[in-house]
Length: 253
Image 1: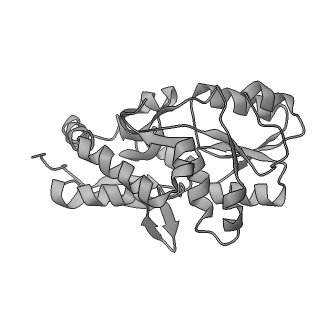
Image 2 (image 1 turned 60 degrees about the vertical axis):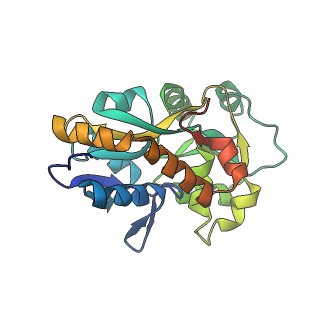
């Protein structure tokens, strides 16, 4: 058995497809369900609070959050936390224009200067993603929004624009929102070499957690049953065609 945590764990979350849903102050979705299922029987309580994604990242970096959930593994986040891998995932270029030639690379995207790119403030898919963001900013082609639904609304209003995120996040965000749910079967996913499959899961804060609590949480979250439960949840929430583009079980290659 795992010893309990010494105090309730503070977990700010932001809407992330079906991974984290926030509606009328209620927090649900795949990761909150997972944490709640671990909460009762294992003696660790997780206190979830809704915040915008950029603030969620900031609270994690400043030691005001015990967990960052969910998160792609990146070098920047590794400075602030201990990563627990639970799935493998990737981001792709997502667009609505069926006639446009597919994007093959970040260079390809940068060359097509008529295309604006709409991203979620606070999302991070590693160094190539950050470099692409900076290059787009220099070209005045970058638009930042607070969450995936806001991105979807921009794409709907100007279908020539594109975004970059994990397909499950985009599909999950729009399927519950009447303003953009009609986009679900129109989305195009273009994988690019600069954004390969990487590890996804969550981070435990190096700043806010005691060594004992950190060890307890690592023991709890690294149990094989946790990754298995999570993968089953993804299969329940998403069609196989979307999973194929963006998420795989932790131990797949």
